[in-house]
Image 1 (tube, rainbow, N blue to C red):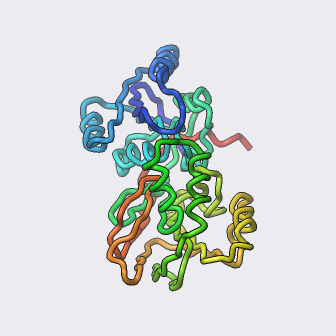
Image 2: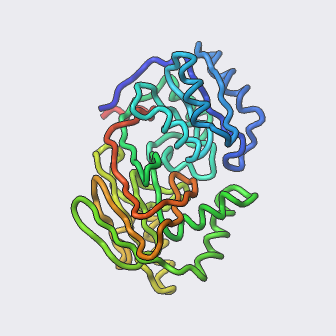
Length: 303
């Protein structure tokens, strides 16, 4: 159920290196916007060093009404992790390369429009995931996309173009792994191009990996793309961009509350959690934490 809260004391968490956007004037823009509307803006800058611990310390210093993640999916993960299972509300200013969760929540992609959520909003309670002990607010996966995300994060170039270039290069020589997947309802065993644990619908690249799912239903989906011949690649890509994931012969979805994933012969595997690459020990267990995060979203249009 959505609600409205009055917001006055606001903390903005700024990631200076997310996306390919010039943020040199961002703090001044936000401060002026808030001052004109009687809000108090405070700022926290990420550094890549103990950001979660430092943010949690900052949250204990002042009674904030909401905390805005100003960056991409990694910044959103950081702030959401600090706010999960609390009454504090997460706001998102989507300033990263992908902004997948913001897109799923219908948050405007332009800064001025997203800032309007300060006074014109609903508060939704959404689910989060724990993936191999790691917090996830949106999408995590194993396989091809995790490899691409790792190279993207280690590269010097941001933006969709860099991601596409890496994906094209790696696709030609990628060897799918074999997975054993067991959920509270069903199982899968076999080779897979990638395995996505989806609490949302859409990657930041606008690929719809999990159509028609909900962020607040107490469940998530395991989305599997099985190995496919090169001749099928364009068709699968088209289906992913047109919300037609389920139409392919090479895709399947398992809806669940928890999953355990084994990768025979491997004690750990490369994964990505909300855009951050991680080495995950196997077997990997993931589970949903229902309605554990409060998020600012645009108000529902009147009927």
